[in-house]
Image (cartoon, one colour):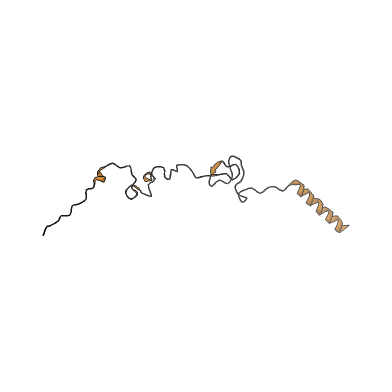
Amino acid sequence: MPRYTRDEPEDDYEDEESDDYDSEDDYDPDEPETYPHGLYDDDGPPLVPCPYCKREILEDSEYCSHCENYLSKEDAPRAAKSTFWVILMVLALLIAIFWVLG
């Protein structure tokens, strides 16, 4: 009975220099230098467009540094009441007092 020997396959591809990215060998999630070229190219701070002027601002900004609008009502300072309304309320109160006493 003939005896067959099992030949190991030749690994020629390991000897060649390959530009292919092998995620099992070349990727370390804790090391940004091992990411594929062009992927996660994020050297700067996170930027988002301003909802008013559409220019890019920092993601955690309270207001736009370009148009100076606040991004949310919670961050905006309370608007001062109009002087007109204050005077109107004082006059209405005085009229009510004179009417009751009168």
